[in-house]
Structure formats: C-alpha cells, structure tokens
Amino acid sequence: MEIKKGTFTLVTLLFLYLVGFSYSSLARIKEADIIQYSLRTNNYEYKNDEINEMLFHQILNSFSSDYWDFMVLSPDEPMNNNTFIQVGAPEANTQFKFTLETGFDDGKGNRKMYRCYIENQQVILQYVIDYWERQQVPDISFWEDVTHEMG
Image (cartoon, rainbow, N blue to C red; front, top):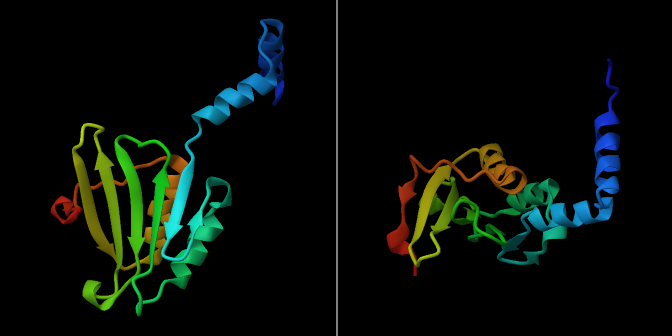
C-alpha cells in the first residue's frame, strides 16, 4: 500500500479531532514550547518577532573597529543552563578578531562565562544562527573560562 505525501498528517489530524483535540489547541501547545529570544545591541533591543538571519548579517556588517559594538542574543529560558551568546566587534585589543562569549547559570547561583576569538565573520554568524535556530549551545571545550571577569 502506497501512502501519499500529506496523508499521515491528515489522518493524524482526523484522529485528534475525533478524540477531542483541535488543530488550534495543538498550535497553542507547540507555540508554548518555542523559545523566545531577545537581541540587544549597543543601539537597540529587538523582540523575538523582529529577529531573523538577515538581522544578524546586518548587525555584524555594521560593527566598527573604532567602537566596541556588540550583539547579545538571550533565550527567555536557559537552554542546557546557557543564558546568552554575545559577539563583540573586532578591535585592536583582540588583533581585530571578533569576541564570542557565552554564559551559563545552573539556577543555584553558579554562573560561568567563556570566551573565544574568531577572525571569520561567517563562523561567528554560524554560531549565532545555530544558537537561535537550532537551540545549539556552543561547544566551549577549547574556550577560555573568564568567569572571574563577571561583575
């Protein structure tokens, strides 16, 4: 028996309807599970519905080495205890590499922050997109622990 594309979804929705679920209630459940983000720069704070891949491109392209521009992407709820990913503009102090930082909070008052320097803007962009789109926390195994710098 051949199952045509879309049949499973239709059959599933029909079953759920028959047992008392509606598509709108399923959509509300799914929406509640979606992580909401805020994005802050030194000039503006963006809400979740304003954030997209093009915005990340625009912000990174606008970074100036004359001024410490930054971008901080934060989920509304920690992801595996991770609370943010932050990008700082290339500058003389970093040999004109981007600064990438991420922070963790175990919910018990134990906070940690890690940093690395990356020259390639595309690599930085991929870290941010993976964090935002895939809820993928960076692998920090080779990053510098800078927890002592936190205020």
